[in-house]
Picture 1 (cartoon, rainbow, N blue to C red):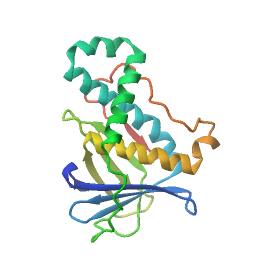
Picture 2 (picture 1 turned 135 degrees about the vertical axis):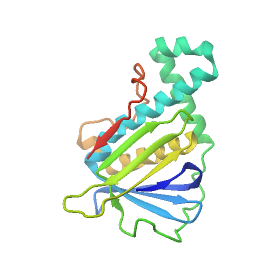
Picture 3 (picture 1 turned 120 degrees about the vertical axis):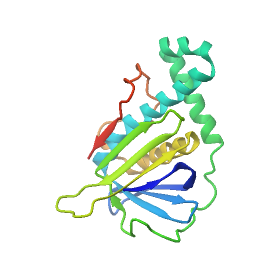
Picture 4 (picture 1 turned 60 degrees about the vertical axis):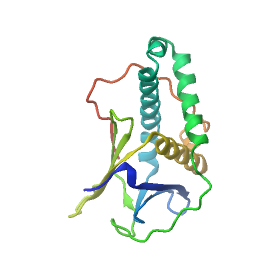
Length: 201
């Protein structure tokens, strides 16, 4: 499995492709390499609530460490959790660069055909990064493709923001009876240490 570390991630592009009825995710590294992913409707709709919850959980855990006095309030008050998570989300998005045009790649280490994601692993790291593993495991395929990367907080929020925009364009959530305007999910108790949320398509 190709492993891409967080410092190499330069740009992200997330777009709904109507002709394919899929979301195309393009990840550009500082070395000029690009990794391409297809997200299907089913995978995305199942991944989305898990991803937004994990990101919110991670933000709240970081804020509790920064301000120990805030920790009991975060633990016991759902409204405070929601407000803090939303504030940090907006803060990260304000500092993100969505204006610089996406740079075309010099190399495609996984090939020109996007990896059809069938398995996603999402793991919050103690460093505050979010580790994402993508795999393409198709019946009869002799050489499964996949890679792993870790994103800093700002890049994570950027990915979630771009994915939400693509979801809104796709109208997938309306078809499934889910409101188009996603809200920051309420944060329940943290999962046991070592848990690695996972989704299989």
